[in-house]
Image (tube, rainbow, N blue to C red; front, side, top):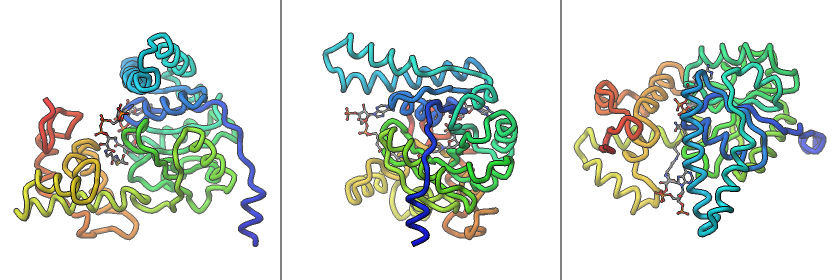
Length: 305
Ligand code: CAA
Ligand code: NAD
């Protein structure tokens, strides 16, 4: 009964302005869906050049959306794009941006110390009620939150690549995340047209906890010479209905990212230290050492040049 009472008593913070820090692949996608859903959004990055790159990701994605929505209506299409872009403000000052927001979504480089340093500065600059979330793929939310004084107003909000297309958002609660914050995040996520699921602060949350060992198993299968990489991809697409095979998907996510995630868990992931599921793969190690990171570098398991 107390659980039901807690849920019914929870309140939802009204979020009007969102700040997204990091305008890379994920940050730009989050800015886009937030602005498309009517939110005013500050998009923050370290340099103007990076912001321009993020803006380009958004406009080319919006063009794809508009092409479907306004097939032969060029004026309607342009108005839609202008309207969404008018709700986005570019900034290189994360503290000023966070100070005027009810929600800050961090999507910067996957490095614990860098994320902690950012949140420490934001904690001093933003109002007490502002909610902070991280889009980390693999780092413990509790470790990132520990740099702030707002443990109850800190959570994980994990989007998927490509953000405009993937419907899921994982909401990660630490032991300290308040019920009100969880409900606010669920409300915001739904307003963005996404479907939220909840998970505790454990390595990989739901999707990556299952997807990453699957990717590593596909590498081992090919390393043993049991099947070719092309046949594994065809098999999982046609035999299991996945939109991409595991090698195509690794190229899409980034081979450096997969290596970074598995190394981190192998060394210190709760319940995963030394687990053979995520042990290093010589094939993956070699490609990363050669600078072949997948689609983003033009070559990974496949060539995109
Ligand atoms: N912006 C806007 N629209 C987009 C888009 C984008 N960035 N990308 C694709 N689309 C649209 C296209 O316009 C197209 O629309 P129509 O079908 O209406 O014409 C539609 O989406 C399909 O696109 P494509 O035809 O180009 O390609 P596809 O059918 O092969 O789909 C895909 C592409 C959605 C990426 C699909 O292959 C897929 O779902 N792949 C798996 C992706 C996945 O598993 N992501 C999770 C990775 S793990 C992760 O993100 C977590 C982490 O922490 C690492
Ligand atoms: P990315 O490298 O494309 O973008 C990161 C951006 O953050 C860059 O533009 C960089 O300049 C900026 N940045 C770095 N430090 C900053 C700081 N202190 N202040 C402001 N901006 C800063 O990376 P990405 O793929 O978008 O990943 C971002 C986050 O999302 C990571 O935590 C990653 O694990 C997570 N994630 C990635 C994926 C994926 O498939 N790539 C999926 C889900 C989650």
